[in-house]
Image (cartoon, rainbow, N blue to C red; front, side, top):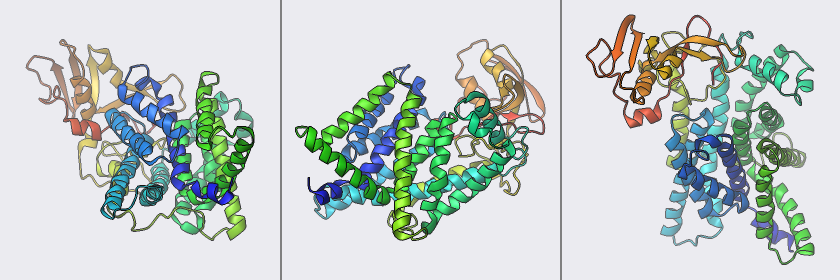
Length: 486
């Protein structure tokens, strides 16, 4: 086969769409109870399209259909999704908007919808997603700069390391090399440098030497959905360098195919291998399938990075997707949404799904444990905390306490619940005899469903649909300490 012809066929969109489909499947497998066990049709459609894109990457319309399905499915699950899934939805929306934009552009100019559309589409959304990727790291490290995170007795990071040491026998020897304090400061410094390095073109690939192995390690510690999501974004950032490396690998593989199974096309051959790999989850654990795929992608990323640095130097800034450009135009609004989403705790809005995971941060109830970020209470909904005194309903009783995410195994702590979340819970209960005694604004109140009582008049009225989708609040620990929560 002609080398130049096969090499030119590999596109940035092909490489990225395969990685994005893979991370989508990881989210669906890890959170399978949401759709598979309950027979959620949107989940089945999303999964089927993700499998097809994984096997046949680079097909513009197939990838576009998968992106649309992911948006519909994830929004249907809002707000009860983890932080990175919320951001995934914004990124997917930018991809879909970019596709629509490019299709209109090509049609108006009467340009054929050939493979050039794939290049144009990727170039349109990649800067927005790449910038959101770098900002996520920035938001994560900023949220951790609070007094409770630096208290190693309750810190999320210290608890995460200790739990991995105790429960992950493959990692325990590695974690035993140094103290918890060493790993704590190592991760703090590294996570502070990552967003800066990714934001600057000349140092963008240097971030891969820590960022990629870090997410492999984080996945081994049990956080493989988040790690898969971030590694897919590393693929997006390094797509030009990866095309160079994978172009040669696929050319070599195609020569072998042509030699031994010439009747099978390269497209079908890749689909068969990918399909067999996906089918392997029925034989091996999904986590092992994740590890095999991740190690392969991580190796390709690091090889492409090393090759780029050997050829052009450490600070040439080549081999990366552009980030801070005007090319996306109005699509930058999705980056603004990501920023506003992360700012929500500091302005009195939601405290979940805002990329402050595992940070010990608290901004509710007039308390701010952050070292330097002020609170601008543009909204007061975050400070509307309720203490549940008693209830005849087990679901409401459970709101009185909550465990820490890491450490303190089996121990529940007394918590306040946000009034918005109490309304959501009460409206979702069909208990006709529901009774709740609670304290709000320093006053004890009693709610009895169907009777005139002392309770707030809107307690039994569900918030509007758009508010329920957009807002989500975590419980707030009583006392002076903010224990670890997701």
